[in-house]
Image (cartoon, rainbow, N blue to C red; front, side, top):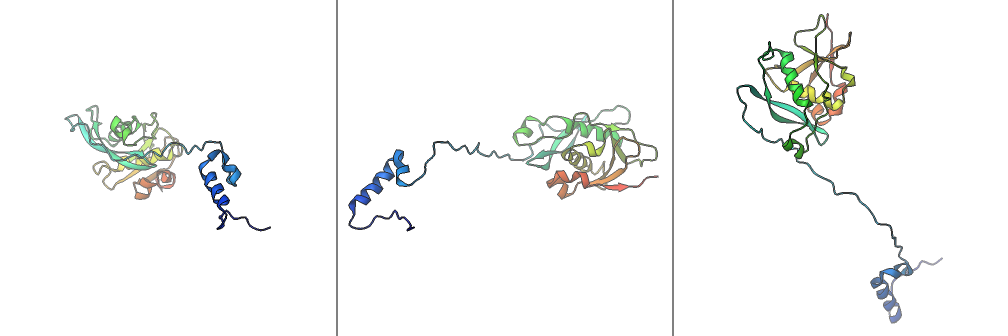
Length: 213
């Protein structure tokens, strides 16, 4: 079968006229060998972009607050934002590791502030997350959560790790020893690596088990 050609040959004005008419009259494009469709193409909404730029703190820390970095989720990664964390003089909350960790986790449980939401930040930490009592034989610098670490969303675990290790006063070596509440649950040493910040789903495999007596 010979291939068809749409090229108009010289000396045939009728062919040129037909080609022009087909180009101008959309309803009869099918007659010119061009397939048309009446189904509208929906490409979906235009992709939205978020800045992930951490907003400035709304106010300077007061006598009962201290400025701390907490890690939130933005564009499937972790990024720090500054928060004024309240410090309460109840018992030894001001100086205890568990007390400081409690205040920071409460910040992660809260919905992002207006400016944070507008910049694209969110949190994956469940509102029920709390610091639990240590087990017998646990090191003094250990922290246990009231749920198994494997049961936490991977992004939530990454947020907790990076937030707790951001403060050199709380974590001098920028690592944290974490475990769950269940008996026999091992403690794991975590650090906030660049891989964890850019791939928070890697939190499940980020810790190193620490043997305790």
